[in-house]
Each structure stands twice: as C-alpha cells, then as structure tokens.
Length: 175
Image 1 (cartoon, rainbow, N blue to C red):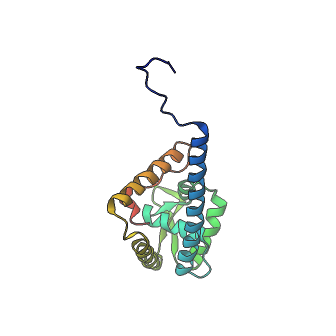
Image 2 (image 1 turned 180 degrees about the horizontal axis):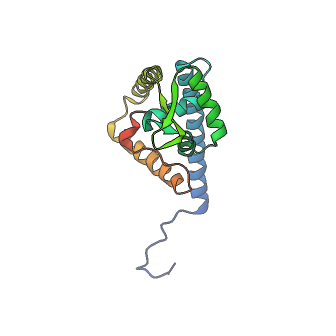
Image 3 (image 1 turned 120 degrees about the horizontal axis):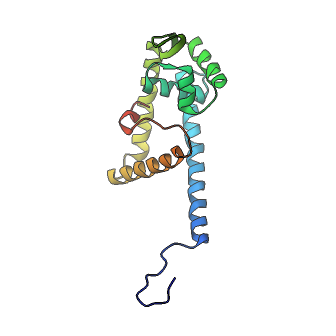
C-alpha cells in the first residue's frame, strides 16, 4: 500500500476478523444442520414410524423429479447406489414407491411415488410449510428474500466443488 495521500486505504479485513466471521458462519450452519436433521427425523416418522430421515429425503427428490432411475437418484443426492437401494427397498415394502421398467432403457427401472406415497408426502409437506409459517411468518418479506438469496449463494459455492446441484427455486415448493 502506498503512503500517498491520494491512495485508498486497504479495505480488506485482517485475517483474524475473517477467521472470526468464518467461525461464526460455521457455528450457525452446524446449529442449523442439527435442527434440520431433527426436523427431518420428525417428518420421516410422520410418513412412517420406521422411516429413516434418509428415506424421507429420497421421497422428496422423487416427488420433485418425478420417475427417476436409481443411478440418477444416487447421483442427485451424492451417495452410493447400495445405500439408496436399501432405502428404496424399504419404501417399496411400505407401499410408498414402485419400480417400473424405464421407457428409455428396458434394462433399468424407474422409481416413482405411489398414490399412497404422494398423499403421505403431500400431508407432511403441508405440515412442514406450516412450521415454516409459524417460525418465520413474522419476519419481514425482505428478510426472508435476503435469507433465501444468501442460502442460494452458499449452495452455489458448494456446487462449484462438485456437490449435486439442486432444483431451481420454482420447484423448491414441492420439497
């Protein structure tokens, strides 16, 4: 940096300030993740008492994407096929999903929600939206929009690292 009177001061924060801010972000994300996991656990139990949160997550993806192949489902959420296969077998056994021959590849199967699965997800999604309304309904709309913008920016940052890209905001209401 120059000592010239016309030079602008270095506006970058010092490393300690950045570290403190990042530590605060990490703490808040960790807290949010724990709470979200607890909510997912509750929601999955509303669908079926023996359902794991991971299976509930699969149902939300299948509902949003429509019929989907197992490999595409695994890629969509970033986990391996064996884990997905076990969850799908459970969901099929309780009548929430069905498998059918993939019209594009007869060797593959598409997974779709059954009418029972669609109804259960509709009920749970309505309950989830009601919880959001109860918790965030008093927030100014501008704050909600800003929160969504910052969360989208954070998610976009992780997509650059190869994490799965989620559906556009217009489809988010179906989750």
